[in-house]
Structures are given as C-alpha cells and as structure tokens.
Image (cartoon, rainbow, N blue to C red; front, top):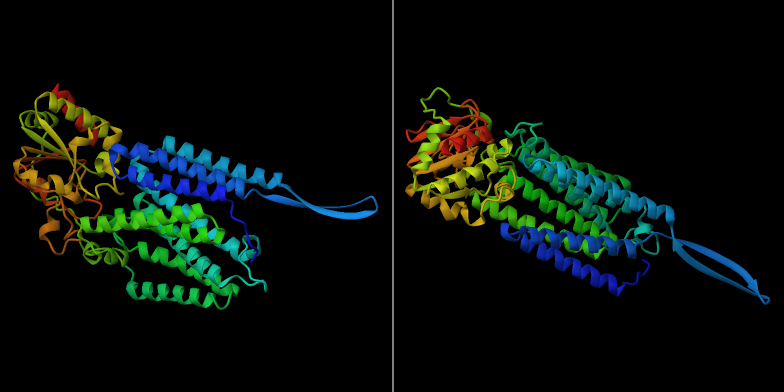
Length: 493
C-alpha cells in the first residue's frame, strides 16, 4: 500500500470539526440550546468539507523531459485537474441547492419522512463508495503489492456496504409508512424471524468469506442480501414503533459513514459517523425504555405486531359526548390549571401557532397552562418539541411525561389535540393491545378531558381505539384541529 503522508494542519482541522460535532450534539439535547447546537454542527461540517477539498483536490501528474547543456533531465509536476474540480464543485452546488430549497419549503408535518429520506441517501452513499472502492481499489490506496484488496479494507468494505444497504432499503420503507404510501399496520410475513436470522447470518458469513476471496459474486451477493434484509426488518414494524425505527436508522447511517471513512482514510467521516451512530443508538435505547419496549423486540418485528394485525377496529357505536368551541372556552377559562397534550394531529393541521395563542389567552384569564409531551408523540423523536418551539411556546411550560403525569389527577382540564395512542389507557390494561406496556399520559384522570379529533371514525397510528373518547368526563371536539383552536380563541375573547 502506498504510504500517504498526513498533513498536520488537516488533522488539526478534522479535530476541531470533531469537537464542533460534539458541541452540536450537546446543544441539540435541549430546546433552549438547539440553535447554538445547529450552528456548531454547520461550522464543523463546513470546516470538514473545506479541509477534504483542499487535501484531496484532484491532480494531474505531468512528466517533463528535456536537455540542458548536454545533460538530460526529467521532472514530474502536479497541477489541479480543472475538469474533476468543476465536477466536484458542481455536485456540491446541486446538493446545496436541493438542501436549501427543501429546508425552506418542507412542512413540519413532513419532517419525519424527510429525515427517513435523508437516512436513505446516507445509506446509498455508503453503498456507492463501497462499490467504487471494490471496482477500483488502487484509486483508494487499499491494495497490497500483489494488487489484492487489503484484508482490513475488505472487512471495512463489507460492513460498509451491508450497513449502508440496510439503511437505504429500511429507510425507504419507513418513508413510505410515514408518508402514507404504505399502511401503518405491521405487514407480517410467515416465518419472518427465521428468514431474517438466516439472511443476517448469510451476510456475516459472506463478509467473513470475502476476507479470503474477493470474487465479485461474494461482494454483490452481500450487497443484494443487505438491501433485502432492510426491507424485511422494517416491514413488520407497526406505526406505534416508528419513532424508534427513525432513530435506529439514524444510528445505522452513522455506522455506515464511519465504515466508509476508514475506506476513504477520512478522519472527519470516522468521527462524524461514530458520533451519529452512537447517539442514534443511545436515543433508540432511551425511547425503548420510555415505551417499555425491548430494543431487540422492536428490531425483530415490532412490539405487539400479532395483536395489531387482528384488531384495531374503531368502536364508534359506544356513547360519547360532543362539545363546541364555546363549551371548551368556558370550561378552560374557569379552570385553575389546563394541561395541553399535543400529538400528530396538531402537526397535520399546523395548529401550533393557534395553540400558543390559546395558551396566552388562558393565562390572561389567570389559568395556569402547561404542555405535556410524550417521548414518541408524533412520528419522530422530539417532533412536538420542535413544533412548540417554532410557535414560541415558553420552554418552562413544556414538560416530559415523567415530570407531569402525576399532575393530571389535580388538573381541571386536559386539552388533547390530535394525540391518540399516547393517551390510550388500553396500554395499561389491555394485554391484547399492540400498545400494551407503553407508558401513556394519564389524561383520563383530569376532571374534564377535551379531545380534539377530526371524526369518531378514525383510530390512531397504531390502529387501536381509545377508551378516553367514551368516558363520562370526556367531551369530544370534532373538527380540524387548527379551526377548532381558532374558534376557541375567539370565544375566549
């Protein structure tokens, strides 16, 4: 393998970029510091990108032969390859334009599927890099004197293409489920556990064999099987577990990038990939604990999937009470404390700004207002926190489940807006329910529950009905969430 000298300034730049990425993760752990965290992330990525461009700029080697004073001489000069540099800068420009346009136009309701789409692109990038390294290993400096790919590089390449392909195909399925192209209910394949374990074992065995034989059939078989297992792993996972899947795929994309960083000898990719991979894995673990799930059970096919495939019909024939915006405004204006519980329905209606205005009006009436956030409300981690922050809801009014759940019993009104599964008491009582065991917000313990919902005919993303709809202390507010909240604001005036 050709020895490549390490530029000390490049190493220092990558180190600074790595520190920026760590500070970015630190900042993103809290809504109050999230903007600062994003700035650190952008600075770190910009520094890493510029350093990589400078240290890996494409060059052309020119051999010059001549004679001076009857002495033959030769020299090799290197200069920047303008065509390759233009191609790289054009690719960066196209990507930047797509990113800027997407960031400006994407609706917050589409953020979960956007994240899944980004994960798929990271996975496919890892696959393409691995394929390029396999087809032209000399260009990557990963060959021995006999022209064979180095053993350690074969391991990196095999793991990179496998994790990248799993990330891509799994993220495509997650995107389709989140975007409504596929149903949120689990798709159960017969003998799926045996199939999944068999395919995973086959991939690992082939990667091990790849270290001894770099035949094309081995590499491409690993690639195809990895694409297949990504589909097989995510299809059986139901909508209730989709936030865990999104964070899990985030972790996969990080490990894929780290593996390719070794192949490309790029320290920044290794650091960034390791940070993304480890933080995504930790987040997935935290969310599984919050949902009382086993991480392995989610990966293996979705918690309670069998129950979800047989149940989930809405029980619309049960008696329930309907209220109006005027009723809701009167009840909340007379309350001492109102706890607002936002969910994905609020995101779909883009009602967060109207909701914040309603909270301000209630505080003018002397009502104490708090917001209760479930760890998996919405369809990605932190979805509700981002929406409320966008509407300038004060951070000190927003509470996580474990911090506020005990207050519902002493609360006058629980105002639930588009949150179904995370308020369903069946998670505590019905062992046949697909959400059984998941901690939920105890909204039913409030003196009055105001539940904003489009209609009584629908069920939550997990496909199960909510007993709160039919309780004596519940008043259903059936309308578009934004329209209902705006009418409540008018009534409060």
